[in-house]
Length: 236
Image 1 (spheres, one colour):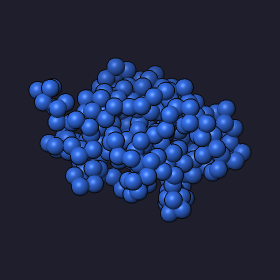
Image 2 (tube, one colour; image 1 turned 30 degrees about the horizontal axis):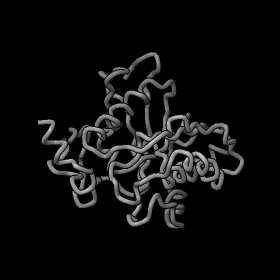
Image 3 (cartoon, helix red, strand yellow; image 1 turned 30 degrees about the vertical axis):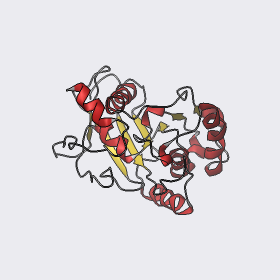
């Protein structure tokens, strides 16, 4: 996308979790170690101007532990973005009420970056629960793309989830049905907006990739998206 904003790039970071029986779990020590590994090999730390994160606790922590040096040194702003939350109603993907999230988030970031000023945390978008119906997931993915496109920063980091990222990028390349995603744990991808993107209809592609996007496989996520079959039938 060439515009007055220049070419805007996003770094999408995933942190998946295996403890599906725990509600909104924290990172394990293994998860924190994976964040440290990513921090050491992530080549764009100093480029990032703002960090967007799903408001689940593990993604807030992932953002904090991966970007801890820059949070401390440059006081990078962090924005909690409910539209980036995972797509399912599995127990691990259920967040807390907005008041609880807003009370916990500063300390979750502060544990990784104690000198970071919590006034740089924007939680104005955190206000309620999300519906995991198929059309709702598609809509919030589109809203996220447009919202990011219209932001002024050129280099944006998004910390989100593997299932949601396929809807966000509109690409299911490599997606494994059993896992619900084609992304690895604590993985990053470099994305950019397409040249034909606009503020009302923005689309992404992976930087440097020449592969054609793969469409959503039939029946994918039917085991996690509530009433997905009914929603699909109603939209036919």
